[in-house]
Image (cartoon, rainbow, N blue to C red; front, top):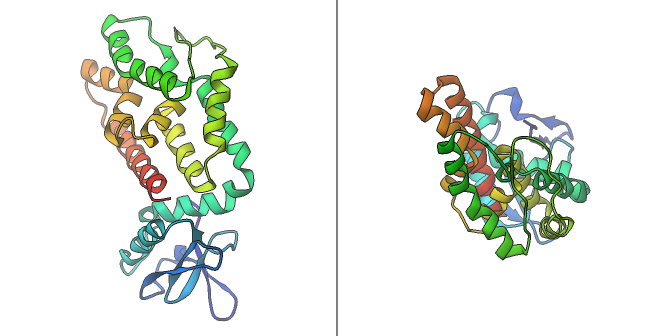
Length: 248
């Protein structure tokens, strides 16, 4: 995880990774460019690249400040997911929006919901019931029709459909794009992520339809504890990205 930094009074850098909490409170202030800055004891948080942490909405800034105010005597980087996403948006995505958007389009070109099992029948049916509504939604919402097939052999999707998705993601700002990419990589499906952020399916449904295979395996063979814990951690990350998107 990228670390946030705060400039001290002598121009140096104070890092939360030092462990101890070095501030009393986090607050929000309007910035000169129409955004909102997060401050610790009146001094602006900076990203790892030294850029001011300025976010597009007051709601997001308040949520980030809440993360910092919730810290105890020691700072837990794992409990700053919105801060991490803001750092990524500002330092890594803002200047490479088209590259990040294209990465999402690449996921669409081999989207999870398009590749089906050929057997057993129960899994085939479960995938169809979960994924066909996503494809139908994309066809209606974006005019984007996607091919499906069984197995792992690559299928070339209609260029017009990929272009429709490209147009959608290219229109997003760096903050929403950051969150969408995280949700896409966690689910393996840009279409599920887009259906979620468009309000077609909620967080729980999005996670469930993205993990039909895992749920089916668990119901048949029993749940693997370590795998379940990894999924739990990834779901928490997905939920943070979803919240970040909605607050941006």
